[in-house]
Amino acid sequence: MSGRIPREFIDDLLVRVDIVDLIDSHLPLKKAGSNFVARCPFHSEKTPSFSVNRAKQFFHCFGCGASGNAIGFLMDFSHLDFVEAVEDLAAFAGISVPKETYEYRTESNRENLGGLYLVSEQVATFYNEQLKSHPGRATANAYLNMRGVSDEVVRDFLLGYAPDEWSLLSNRFDQKSLVDVGLLGKNDAGRVYDRFRGRIMFPIRDKRARVIGFGGRVLDDSLPKYLNSPETVLFHKGKEVYGLYELLQKNPKPKRVLVVEGYMDVIALAQFGIHYAVATLGTAVTQTHLDLLFRYSAELIFCFDGDSAGQAAAWRALSSVFPSLKDGRQIRIMLLPQNHDPDSLIREQGLDIFIERMQTAQALSDYFFEHFSRDLKLSEIEGRANLKKEAEVYLKQLPIGAFREMMFEELSRLSRRHIVDNEAVDVYKKSPKMRRQRNDRLSLPSSVMALLVQNPRLIEVVERKKIDWNYLEFEGIEKFTEILNVVLKDRPANHGILLELYRGHIDELVIKKLASWDLLIPEEGVEKEFSDALDKLLAQARTTGLEKLLAKEKINGLDSEEKELLRKMLANK
Image (cartoon, rainbow, N blue to C red; front, side, top):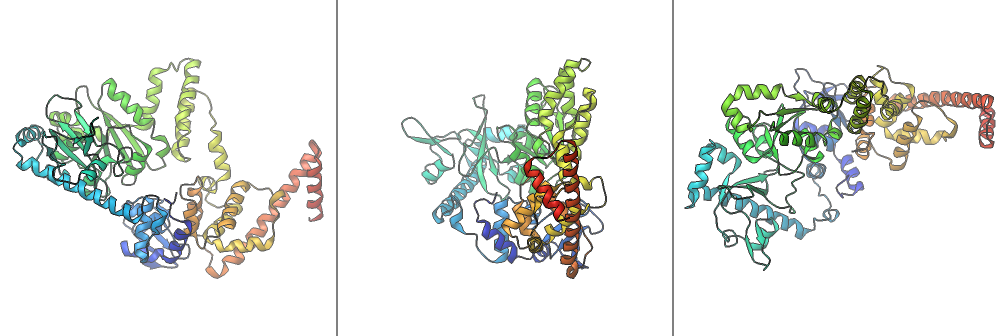
């Protein structure tokens, strides 16, 4: 999870950097009691609900629920991945990320990567110039004119032209670099040649504006119509989308992102002022694609042709989305009329109708259940049984939350029988987060754990009490002791470091939720409050454990180990 950066370095970095100073450098903060506040950068609001706590090294928005430590803030605010955020945080602290920790980032490799980015940028610029000056440019420009592509769109997307020549690039740029970035191919005899010839060129840029690959479209009827760069050290098609850089240049926080099928779909929509479209790069939608796009918008609309091939593509895309559908995220499916792509539809029906189609696109939940209902006879018990069996495979991939619960409820309604999602029930029982959805007051175990999560130094109080956890009994004790053991083992200096230990963990949201509760305890009283609450919890847990053993003795009897445990508990009562 740490991108091969030493855990010790990350912990030290989170101690060195004060989250208040970091966020204040991006977003002016105002002092409000023991916290600092501002209007949330992650959603629109008129009054501040975004709070930063110096003691916890933690931020939380009471409006949209966004929360995290210094690394999490940079990931969300600047749209960075984990390693990029650590690098930015290290730069803020004035220190360097240890270079030897990167599997591929020796000094020479870093220089090589820089050279590959440079040659890719130079080739993109070169192709763009060929569109203006090469003797064979007329065919390329005629195609763009026919598609209504303006000079402004050509400039924004850095469109170009690859002349129909076999050695144009190798005569101008470093041949090895061209091979490394996939711009040259090799035949059986080992001779190199330009991979892209006689094509409109679409440079693919990452969110940091670096050219990482290319797509090319033929100008005649030859095949393949579209050709993409091969997988290289710079380009991984399962991780990138076309048009994301250009989208973010127009609007870094779009209300929605429209996911279309090809380069020209993105270009055509931009021509009509729809600057929030992206395209996958000749591959099925992956969870990495989804997680990338959900960084920038909470709503994704998948646009597909309305024919059978388009519907099949829509279902393939849908089948990969469920693990990414946390509460607050939404996916819609937009199927186009027969024989239309986005370009032809928007030209025939106009921009307003196209936007209306987007806004009324079918919700994923409706599309999902309609897909099964169409193929299964729900009037028959067998059909309802098949619905339950097939749909549950997908629904169990959903993260725990309200959306998951509602999807299971709808499945229950459609199959006309009560379906208990045992996995969700188990997590509900163990998780303070889920219990809080039903109750505005924290339970005693949750209060104790919230104090510890917010103040990991309190683990010393736990150690001084020398607790034997074997015969204690209270709701959620398994989750309680799991978190306790993490704090005991890793000794995080503050909550920000503890949260980093849970990045990507199933309990990450539980830790964030516990940290977000204002327990209204002054700093000087935290340790006594924790000690007293823990004593009360232990007393209740011993009583419950004893009652459980006595009840079992009366009904079923106890084994020798349980008898010895009961003897000790009665002696200590």
